[in-house]
Image (cartoon, rainbow, N blue to C red; front, side):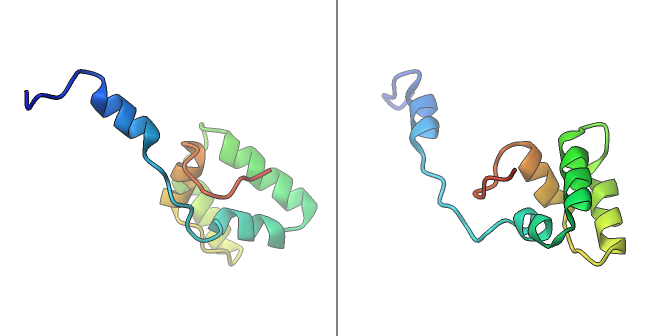
Length: 84
């Protein structure tokens, strides 16, 4: 089809640059938390049995706006800011 060789798309995807955006909201929140809360949030983020929605709602109750989509991106390794 169209003269492309199989595997070209895969190569293009692998070579596509991801331009880092602004600092991650998760990183900002983690910096603002006390060490024990930071540890708890990181544990929750890494525990896929806890839904992103539950984390988002709990953080909102504590005054931190953290969208569940950001949590999902963190879990997929798509954030530009490295955390931990």
